[in-house]
Length: 363
Image (cartoon, rainbow, N blue to C red; front, side, top):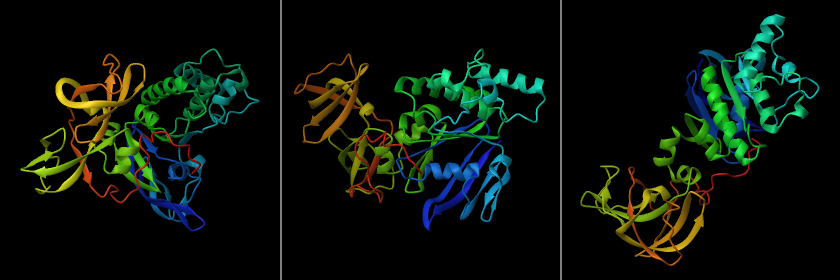
C-alpha cells in the first residue's frame, strides 16, 4: 500500500513545527526524512503514526484517509508498524512472545507460523526462548523490526532506529533492514540525522529545514543536483569556485565548462559547486598545491590550492599518495555543473562544511 502526505502542517503551543510537508511513497518504496536537530522530522513521523493531530493537510494510507484537520484515525487502526530508537521491547517477554505480541487475533498455530517465518526473515530463528537482555543491540533491533512487521502493516515507520548501535553494526543493520523491507514490499519511512544512513537505506530522501522539505529526490540527485546550498552542504563535502558566463560557456579556473542552464546571461557572476569526487589526478592537468591531506584508508581527502588562490577538496584513491606542499596536476570530471548565485545563501543558511552527522533530533 502507498503512503501519501499532502501539505501537512502541525505544531505545539502555536509554534509551527512542520510546514507544508508533501511527498508520496509507493508499496515497497523506502523513503527518508533527513535533517538536523529540531527540523521537525520526528514530529512528522509521529503525525503519520497517528500520535499528533494536523492543523492543515492530510495523510492517506493505502488511499484511505488517516489524518486530516479535526479527524485522526487511532494509531492501532491505521495499519502502521513502528520501530523506535530504543527498540521498546518487553523485558519480561521472550523473543517469541515479543514478536507475537500483536497477533492475539490469530490462532495459536497461525501465530507460531508467522513468528517462525519472521524470525527466519530477520536471521534470528533458534532464539525464540531468549529474553531481550540476553541479546546484543543488533539482535534486539531485529526483534523490534520483526515485531513491527508481524501484523503485516501497510506502512513501516523507523525512528532513528540505529542511533544506539556502533558504526560497524549500523552499516550492517542498514543493509539487512533494507533487504528485509524490500522482501516484504512494505512502504517504509525512516527519519534520521545521518546522511550516510539515509543514502544507504532509502530510495527517496527528503531534506528538511525548519519544518520545510527543501528537496525530495533520489540520493544520487540530492547529492549531485542539490536544489540549494543548504542541501549541498548537508549531503556531503563541497567547495565553490568563482565562475562567469562568457560566450555561452561557464568560465572558471578549471574551465571552461558547459552551461548548466541556457537561461544564464553573458557576464553573470556565479559560484560553481565542486564535489571532492569531481576532481581527478591528471599529470598534465591544471596545477594544484597540496595544502593538507587526511588518510581515510581506501581514499585520501586532499585540500588543494589552485593558481588563483582558490581552494578545493579532492578525494583520490589512496594509491595517489601526495605529500603536503607537493604540486600535482588535476582535471575536473563533473557530469553535473551546479551553480549558485554569488550572495552565498540562496535564502537558506549554509551549514558548516561537511555537516553530514549533526546531533540526533528530539523533534
